[in-house]
Image (tube, rainbow, N blue to C red; front, side):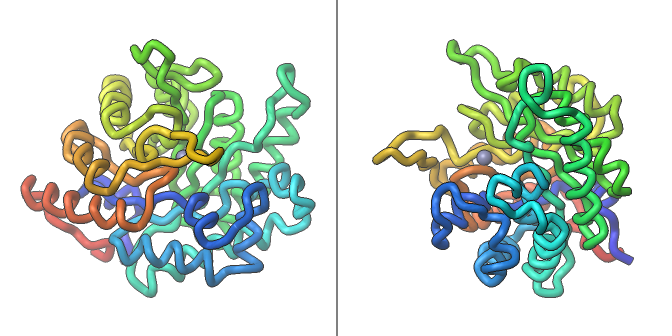
Length: 311
Ligand SMILES: [Zn+2]
């Protein structure tokens, strides 16, 4: 029988995937157009990216559904396609493993606006949009749901509740932190500190506490975040840092940390107790391949049984 993600995570650290957005751009997605729609219009291209991650050694793959909520799809006049986009997202990610065992993590990104009273969106509206997306992802067979790149606890909670409502077996809450201007610490854009975020996630039923993306959150900062997370929780921790600092080159944001540079921070991250490691913006299958090699050495050096997903 296939072990659940939460079962296997107790036995050994798992490897997630790398960036999807930047890979879609490389595959020809125009800036500002709807990458999630490609699950329906260019499934072969989405599959090729995710297959490259699977081949590089990812144990878990996030679905290409970051902007797959009704509110996000509506910006591209695709609000009628919520169910299909998300269902196809799960199917493509599953296919990427080519029959090998792996975990498909249904991805829910921010709805892209502000909640009342700061913005125009009602909590009930956002909750309904997340519920619709989570239901489609779970029905299509996602092994877990991640609510990612979150900066506000209010929105995060709507995502967690939606995933619970959908019956998700594993719920991952993932915050995006920015390093403060003086470099002394990091918190989300909405001012949330890591310890507070983790306590909030635990209180509200998340199974895995995570961080991804953010400005200045490289491997070193990610390690500090793991330390701060572990100081307040025993829940598994997942980290997906960007490939270094964003730089503006020819009016384009680029992340230029190479696999060799980035992977140097991996062992410290694992020593700190990270349970799922992957990467966010700017990372590529080559980064994940480098991670796989170091992760396998780590597993071996620690005498951890390199257990397989099937018991
Ligand atoms: Zn990112």
